[in-house]
Image 1: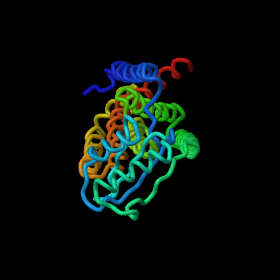
Image 2: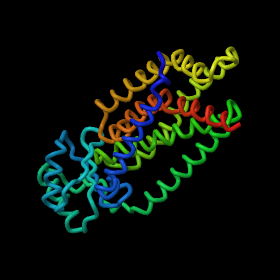
Image 3: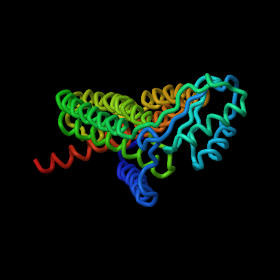
Length: 288
């Protein structure tokens, strides 16, 4: 099949999604950052038995007068409650209400603290530095192994993946927290692996067919690696999806962006990074 024949359509689809993300970002006044980035209050308690998140959320909303508390299970009996920053009186009111509802004593309270947003700012800064450093190292490596055009195409593909993920989170108002940053770093490494496999096949085909047009060589490589790319992605998705379905809330927070990232990364390797290498190769060749 001629995958590269429709490369302009792939570019347009990605551009539309990113543009929709920009519109959503402007319309909603920014991204939906969680307490890890905004700061707030966290209460951890051992309920001592199975509990319903909605019951606890109702108590928190009533006692703290907040609209959207984050309730997370930790194991079967522990709960983590995160809200926008509240005063000590409201915090104590939540604790007392939960103790009364579930018949708990003072030892049930594990932790009650205010979460500082400054720590999360440092986390975000460090994560951006790590991404930039890894991208630079990848660019150097791919340029040495292949050429600069392929390196640039691969890095643009990574940038595409990150922008698409942020756009999806902006459009659907999904909450961004520290696990999202960890997922981004994971996906950067995962998606570049698929791209390198395809690029390596292109290089191999190029050596064997020097007189064949570069786009034809690249399209042949895409077809030869397509099944490998699809099966590798499906295998990863099955594992991560099971973690999302069966895992606790904190595991779900991490696995959801991984699921999105694997889908976007697989699409990007085939439909964005490789076509970009073809376009860059043709453009620079004409200039030369």
